[in-house]
Length: 261
Length: 211
Image 1: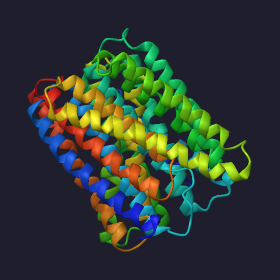
Image 2: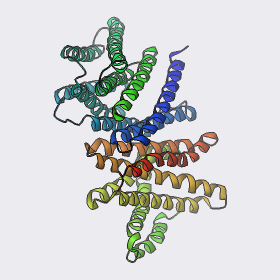
Image 3: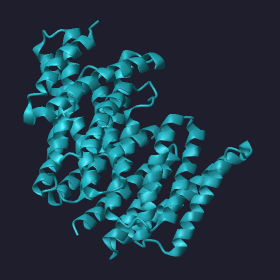
Image 4: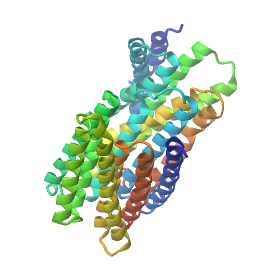
């Protein structure tokens, strides 16, 4: 199966997963209409479903034309902003985790610089950068507030992020023969961190960790998968989408536990 | 060619006069009037950007108009929110008024340019476009109310609500841009979303969150 076909299949799988999550969240909202987090989360899921439908409709109606700057950029932005607002409603201490949050923002903007260098899509990437930065900030702050990571895990995550950005940047400057191995090393590093975060999340969700810890870890796995998807192509992209689906399911489970607590 | 400014004057003058005598309905009428004015301004801006970008009319409708129209509808609602600090129900009234005014003016111009012979198309325009503008405004109002209620960092919430209304509008315009099944889905979309939106609205009312 070609990567294109696989990615379409993975995309449909993601839409199916999000639709189920949407139905479950709608049920949560009927039980806890007073929870701003639940309503924001519901709206975020609606945004991403509408956004995915936009992509599907566009691919069907105009398959031969590459999508210009369009409403889908706003759909993605809506998802991250509303999702971030939902998380902010649950992790309200504004003073804790600022340093980690700022590091996440730097990572987001460095990544955005790389996206622009790869794709040349200035407008889209400049619009996406602050939105992703906000989402990563919220994720890092929630991880800190929930004490979800041990100090050495924070160090490892920071080192991996820094190394990844350095290696991705180096790809533009190294001789042609080194580009491929360096690219492969980047993928391995990205998916190694992804696997570690998913393992940690899976354990937390199945174990006795508090709902807040579960949610923070799920968010971290999801945020990393978003970054992975943006930086991948071919079969790696498909793998990133599958990781995203897994992280979203974990996020949903932990979110429900926290909101319905 | 139609003379949109003349149509605007024709619609706006009676509404403007009724504002002095409307009493309780004043907020709705003022919002409705704003909606019609905003529709006219959006048409100017879309036309300008179409020429500058070199896009076709169809591409402008699919890619540019949703963004421009939602920005133009968002601005008066933000003005109402920050200047008049309305109750939730008043904010919803303003949002519905702006959406209804926008849809009505757009429909009037459409009727004059394309004719009103086909009842089927008139029903589609009323039930699809009309409802779509109201739903996108309701979505916005919902977002603003929740942001205000939750006392969250406001900017992401506002921007998120705005972006949601843009993608909804964009999807509708994209679907109806091609004939066949996609346009049928597009026409159903606003009513289906209205049903979906009713769920959190009812829950929040029952929970006493909306004033």
